[in-house]
Length: 617
Image (cartoon, rainbow, N blue to C red; front, side, top):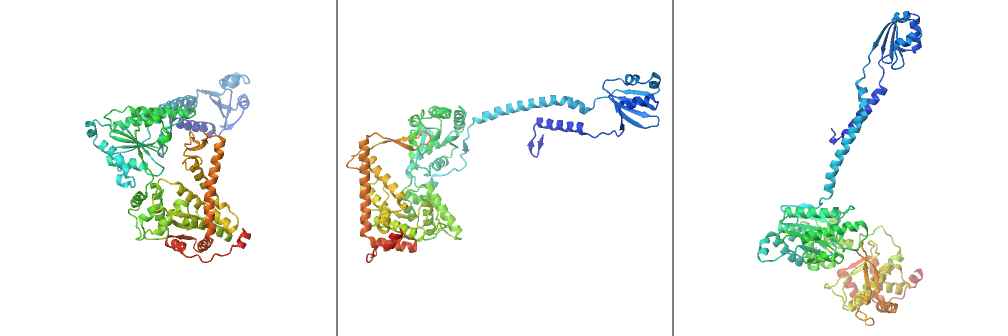
């Protein structure tokens, strides 16, 4: 039975009918409007000869008197009316009355009331039996694969949609060619890698690359996340793996893409509890399925992770994921190509230079650049512009890096001056350092958690940093702290992040990079990895307390040297510092040609120290 498109179970229908019948039986109005009297009144009327006729139906006694008045009475069930009357009336008095006894039949609802408990029990039995049968199908579906499937006709992407990863695309072109013409490789006795592991930071395009491979090959594409294999019940993940590979072999050639495989492929024996047992069984099943492929089975496994160091070694051995393709953050040329892809179909003003935007965004991933273009388009739409200008792209870069501008934050005059001198100190030290990154932008506008920022833009992107470069970076970081002390006589909490990052770099120079002549070219300490978090949470010391003290002394020496270099630059160029801070207080943001002209201009005479500011501070 259905109601408004929904099925009503039989047991619910039976219960509803039973309640209706009981209500009708108990509360139904009586159709008999006769007067009711006690049985003693009937006996008295018979004794006095006033009764003409008595009709008995079950326990109901209907009396008709000689004056044609009628009333009703009741007597005990299974009792004879003759015996009741004979106890008090004479046989002659009883014989004068016409007595009729009717055999009263049970109404239909009476049978239903008696049979209703049996019907309900039968209905419940049928209901639970059907649920058990349906549960069996649900349990079997619980172990089915949850992978999404795209057919070869559906477009999942092309290599043209993936920019900035030319080397990675070259590696994966072999996979595409194998899926298209596997017989060419078989004829030469060659074996294509059964598994390709895409490794790279988040947002660099690993999933996009896998979809492009499927689109170029024109084969079915199965996509699933590693976490979808693991359930609370042991054996479910292994069942889903078997179902996924069975379905893939049925439609081969095809591609199985497992995203975030580190969720299920972590090294075995490192976890705790039953959930780890389930994960390890799932991983074992994946290993068996990958190693059990026939040589002529055209099924390619592509997986993605940003933590290859925690994967099980059996998963990375030859014959499984024996080829790793690095999907790294793009360089300047790659970022320009990615920006070109994401700006297709968007109206851009003539002053927009994708090359300059690409140079301004070192370290940005493909996802960051896509977000940047989208933010610029949103800002242009909010300004009711017909096209996207360079100003919107520059604002979008700041929003992606630091967050939106905090216009509601109101700072006092003194705090504004302190921020201006702090950022001017960073900029002045960066400008005065030789063979350092050129100064690009200074801002005292609050964004996110920052009160202002100073940006330098390297001429070339380098993957290696020298000791001299890191020492100059440390000096620049202490420029804000030194400027506060020089102008206001004391430091503020605004330099806390600078000090934290400087300390981290200085310690890494000593303990990781071997840049200390005193400690020598060696590393100190081994980092520990969390079992479930996959991140460094502790460091195991493999050196003595004496060495630890020497490391602290060397870190202090590096920091003090950089700090003293920054203080010297600030003291020797106090006039330029004041000029720069004063200009910042007026315009809030300095960049490009205006910044370069200001830094190259003559600062004039050195003004006297600001005693009032020192007293106020």
